[in-house]
Length: 57
Image 1 (cartoon, rainbow, N blue to C red):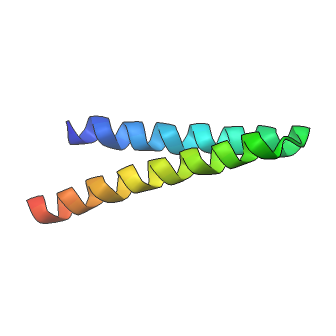
Image 2: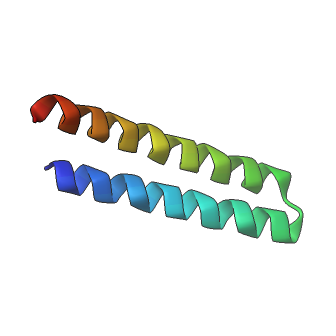
Image 3: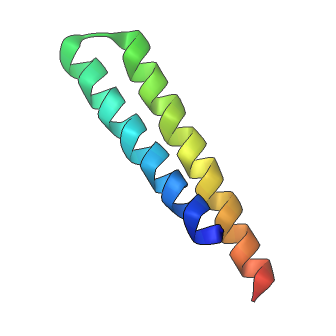
């Protein structure tokens, strides 16, 4: 389960980074902001999983 959540976090981060890059390339500030939000969501999920791993061991 934890590995699945970690993969989901990485996927969100990569998807957000791509969306931000596309938004920047086409000059769409809204898409850029959505990309940054996606990255933040992935970062938060990853931090949560790391904290759970720390307490598990």
